[in-house]
Figure 1: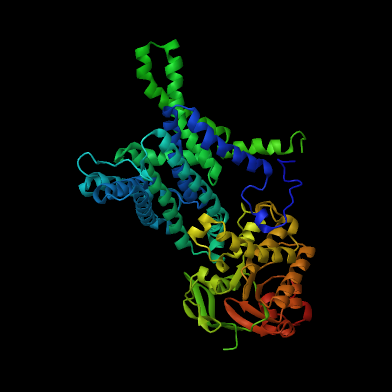
Figure 2 (figure 1 turned 45 degrees about the vertical axis):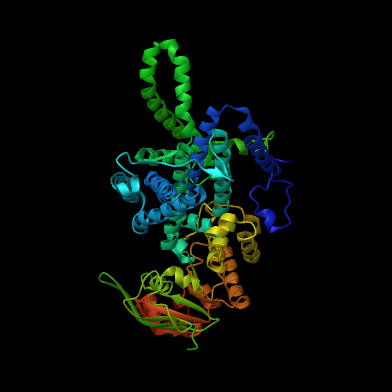
Length: 355
Length: 264
């Protein structure tokens, strides 16, 4: 049986600790790899690829936020700001010093990690809602600083244009090229996160989330690991910000406001806290839903309303439907889309038997 | 400096309550030392001071001659002091295996980058420590429970897993806060056997808080009796059993101190 644990005999610890012990899971991963590397990029229009690219960027950010909120149990409403830190760091290095994009990306991530760790310092003393407010303050302070300090923001417009990234001398100009670049980042972020949460560091994060006193008694330095979680998570956020900047060709603080922080929180809550797969589901859901709603409105809205009214209604109804669907999904499955998927998977694990 | 753990004149007050008063204690390497006493005698406070949760108001605690009086709990653990809690403190969402692997945390080195890459870096270490954890799982006879989330286990087994997590730290000193509290006879017997084996085979020094006098008298090398935050007796189980202060502390003034008076 390829889809059951039964009969899968492991003779080494390496095999027992593999990411995908079941054959069907390995095949599925292989199938998705073929789909995303070979089929999708060459079969759909550039416009659709640009949407997929948005999803890719969101996945990286959602994974990072999930490390902090889902795995370590700390909350942050400052991730939008950490993204802007990454974005403006990279943009400034790109424009002022003309550094290549991989260096900018790394520097953006590191700067965001540093700022994130500083904003995370209150987490050592406060938890839950109080920490949420502290990080919210971080968000507002960073937003204000970037907006008002012209040295960072590059002028009144608070936006900096970045040159097109290049890879081996080839400028990445089309959405298709951008797609492959972002896909690589998604793969690295995915595999890295899965590895992180199944080894020493990730286990310590989960321990802090589950029982901080017990974590301390077995030798986990809570102080260090909470800051580490903030730093790692913010690094992801910084990288997300840089990727978004190169995607848009411009660093603009308006892309990284409180709404962005909340969007990302929505992603991981809808997708599933403390789950890598959930981060993907959530990123897809939150990114695609507004776009799908717009399509649906444009397609079917004309049947009920006049064409002019549709254009007026779309932006409002989009928000209403978006909020409504989020509530609907959370009521149906409070533990997120990942839980929904696991229920389906567990059902078929035994199928066609009842137990 | 022969004692493994040296406690000198430690005191601790909470507000107006004098939890522990000028307590001194030497723990020899390889011993099983039981701390007994009525409720509120300061037993758990003593354990909390050793493991670094509370810092004493006065006095000094030294492990292998090194002062650990004001060291944080995670650093005390790093020096080889493991403990279990009166009310189980497992990571309930995690499997037995992960709980025990967390016990190995201080013995592992992998940093963020090694964990991120995993293959050829963290993996090697994970496998090596997994072997040690498997030894402990074998020893505690919980091989069939490896993949079970600890929250789903019955109480007695949770106590056993918590002991396992403490053991996977390779502790020099094992602090057990009522390892048999709430267990039935069979579970108590198992636990007593594990404690003796840990002590004999792995040479861990054990400091034990326990209310079941039968067990305490059976397995301890030495017994310390606390009452109202003060040490009122110390000695072998037999010496303590006959001590008149001890009997007084447990039963109040007694005109005819008997052998069975300590029981209960």
